[in-house]
Length: 546
Image (cartoon, rainbow, N blue to C red):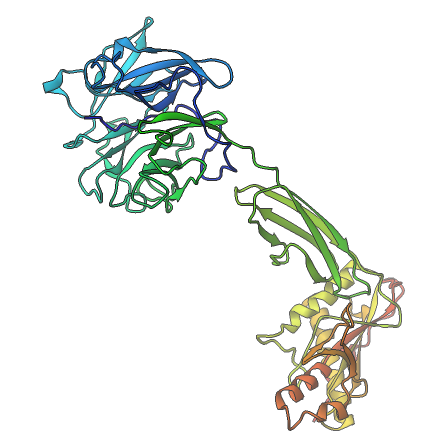
């Protein structure tokens, strides 16, 4: 009976995991490895890929005369061919023989243990060392508590010789063959540990090997669906040896409608065993395609007015593998972004194979206009109060940080802060209320943020200056949109707002709230701390309101 074995991946130049961009069209390995009437499988490479160890079954030249499987070797020729194949006489006998791992230096071969005579065969691993130009007689590798009852089992030994993955029906198995792991420490090999329900099914899991970083596991299974009798899957380690991501099928290029297993990698090529073109398996080869390099650039459109928010950025992504994950420094996740104020914006993009690229764009704005209103971020107040409003829609103190940063950026700036009320109440009371609102902003910037009091002039405008907004459909906007199609410009006068008092009370309240605002106006950019007179101390006191 043919014994299913698991072969070792010798060395991988970089992490080989599911993030392959793709593979070339598979080709039946050229040269003399594949033969008619026999089965070739389980490719294992020397470190430099110059030697290919493989197993041949049903060949009359085998020591078992076609009834067993023996170890053969091939030498690399031209055009990805392996030629001059020959039987590895010193390690073959009349039983089943196979290489299941090779050390990093190539001087240790791990083998299916069949060297103690038929009656004494212990289903496990043995190791042979290369000494003085010869392979020594294999010696059993002791794995505590490993008892294999069935005829189907296999092993994988990593190049650093400290991890063995075992495929067999053991204690706690879910299916016909499950994956277990044994690791080596100063005390020797550990007892096999089940590798978890995520990668083991009610079917069989065979032929595993690990990437060189030991965090990506490849194996063949008939228990997770797929194209054929057995497909090759991968899973990524999530923590310890029993925690793995959900298996992912390697896809139609690698897997066929028949049996596919024993996937391994050497440099930029992969090999595996497949019966896609017949009843017996041959060894197939495909090249790993290099993913297109990911890059991103951006071009910004500057803000058209001081303090505005009509800036935008157009990003251009080139190369990479879709889908892309995008994150801007302001939290936006779309490729192109708009409604931007002045600032530096950085975009980081990650593609489907974990390539990353970044770009940055600066958005500028015109210089602050003198003697014209400067639109500030929303600073709002409760009805008939001058406390700075903070709720689930706005944080007025955060909005005043814009004013603080503006004054820091322009150390010569003298700014008028004017506050406004809605039209409800008497004009006289609204004038006092607006003065207190302006002074609340003034006190915050002076007392909390340390701005020189001579650089801010608080002014109360009362209810006399209605706010201008823009309306499109049922939406009101406090910033003039760049696209004015179907947009109305509206003054929030008392008569306009009162139209909604009965038919839409919520809108009535919201429009009044928009009028309760604070604006800025540039007075000068020539502030001189040595010549500017002291600020009026009355601004730090609120006027009597009631």
